[in-house]
Image (cartoon, rainbow, N blue to C red):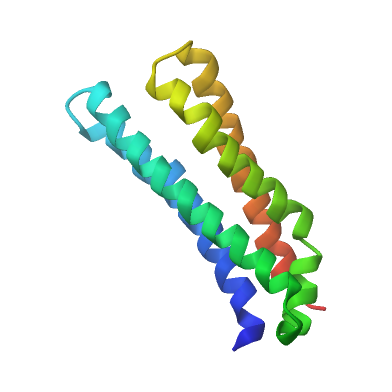
Length: 136
């Protein structure tokens, strides 16, 4: 079972980013009455997603250092750079970019930067998942 934990954590991270960013948030803007309402709700959801990302990345980093994980730790070690990069992107997005978007400060610039950071985090999570699932 412990050999599958990194794959589960990586899969949960990538799938949660995918569902939130590419399905849920676009549907908010499609179905809520105003873009302002959709934006407020999206901000809350992206905050929740940031904490999911942080938790998954920290869990993966912890597994990579655990001697009890054996081969699973080695699988995460092959992806540790992408785990750290994804974690940093989640932190920068939540604590650096998001407050500026919410404050509507140079909205086009910060929204573009936030979208890029989210896409980068999504790519990191996908890479982690791919490397963790790769047969040793």
